[in-house]
Amino acid sequence: MAACLTSLSLPSATHPHPSPSQSHCCRLSSHAPHKNTLFSSAIGFARPQCHRCCGVTSSRIENSHALVDDDIHALLQILPRDLRRNLLDDSNQHHLMEVILDVGRPPQACYFGDLGRRCLRKTEVSEEELEYAQNAIGELGGDNRAGIVGTLHRISAIRNKKGKVIGLTCRVGRPHRENMDMVKDLLEYGKSILFLGRPGAGKTTVMRGISRVLSDEHLKRVVIVDTSNEIGGDGDVPHPAIGGARRLQVSEPCMQHKVMIERGVMLIGSAHGKRIEDVIKNPTLCDLIGGLETVILGDQEARTRNSKKSVIERRAAPTFPFLIEMRERHYWVVHRTDKSVDALLHGKKPLVEVRRRDEQFNVVTERWKTDD
Image (cartoon, rainbow, N blue to C red; front, side, top):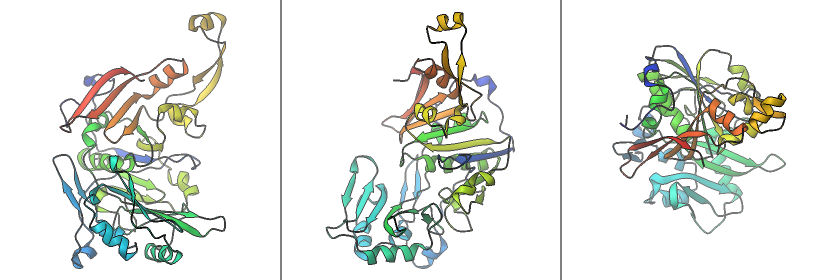
């Protein structure tokens, strides 16, 4: 853990010693009735045995902060042969985020960082090529997603109004270790944490890593509940990336809340969004930060606050005491949820903690900054 990494606002004396209690990480969806999906994981870095037998190797990247064994060939096998060759020869292959196949349009490859996206060829994707990819993937789930057994890769589909698949997004799944030192100290508190970020910000990757830490280092009992098997990979046998964690699979997205039947556990969750304000304004997710209610103030209190008599207040304690905005892959803003929500509802800017990596990839922490 980097030396500069510190806790958000609790005094260091309150750090609890990790105990072998139960913990869950959650994937939150604004479409699910209860919004929560439990999961945690531990990371290993083994390629599926079938690819070893075939003599196929995986793309592997190592440095002092990250270890990636992405088994890229398993994903490339579902693509047309010319696209497969194109990507195998790509010097930026380890930055590949996803491949987009839309009928009637040239196929595209999307990359992390400033690499952006590029067309893989000038000719358009045909219905036959899309059908080939679908057959290689197998049946799509109720959320229009599927995985590749033994890997962390996932595929999502776009359908027309008749239900026919007309597009596929093939996302590369990689088990990283690099972000754990940005959050390890917060895990010592045993409090629930909500990660907020745009698609591709690294929420799923971080939660796999947190699950590894909770399961293998904190010796907690960890369970994954994820509707599309994004965390632990597809198939009945979980990917080695989740280590000692177990998994509860969900047959349909609408059944997600019924799988989550346990109480009194630590939750690590993720939701789509950019800022904490997005959660406050979302009627489906706002209960996670305590919910909102209208309160009528007395005359004296209204004068003290310099506000109207009818105001919106936080209704209860947040489900997640900590909320982390993943504004960039290596730039996080940490909120003490109750204090930040109250400040925003009172028209003030919250005090936050910024965690980022410098040019040497060390974690730099800036405490008690006014969030701008």
